[in-house]
Image (cartoon, rainbow, N blue to C red; front, side, top):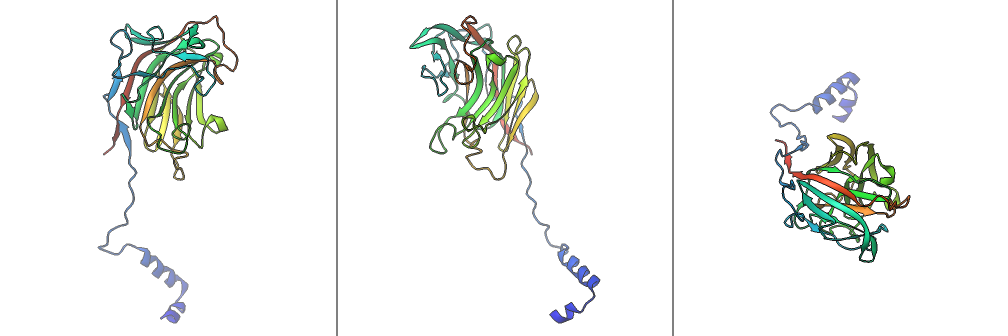
Length: 285
């Protein structure tokens, strides 16, 4: 039979080969994987509108406390004092003050939702007005709520910077992603920046859309940075499949914020937050 086939004309052999690849009548077509698509709910699953007065709602916010530099040689002491973080007239204010605090020369606050708001995926919207002045380093960001990967909490378990700003570069706002493979300490971090001329005089909406396969960052609804999960990525590149929590703070000085010193004539300086809203991830049908 093999010899007979070899003696057949070439066009006939091609025709037979093509027929063998055609779907046999009555057989099922091959299964093609359907890519899951996502959207977000229209109603927040977690939020703080700051429609009260006094200390930040203790059912939603806790504090990181202390003044040992926070891994960046920062100069502030974080407190839970009412002077450093308070809610009034619908606004949360985080205030950095030039004053003796602990063993440091500045006081500030770093609010966290850990244990009170831990999120796996979602859309995060924070409407904020930023401080200004050389030496300030405000941030709206996220960290892993547990240590699930590697030998170090950071950077192995990831960081999402929804908004970072340094006062010596007043009109530039940054978004960054940090992982074991991609982080600033080895000069491989992934990120971008955008010019926002009125960052310290007007409120703007800083947002992050976190999906299982891509994370995007926007200001006032305009996307300016996306980080996509590639097929080759492991936890070293993509630890973003575990719960994270939100952080709001103003640092003073430090490796980045203090790269051009600290202007002591600018204090006090505040970051004002109008609202924080988290919308749940939904699979499209």
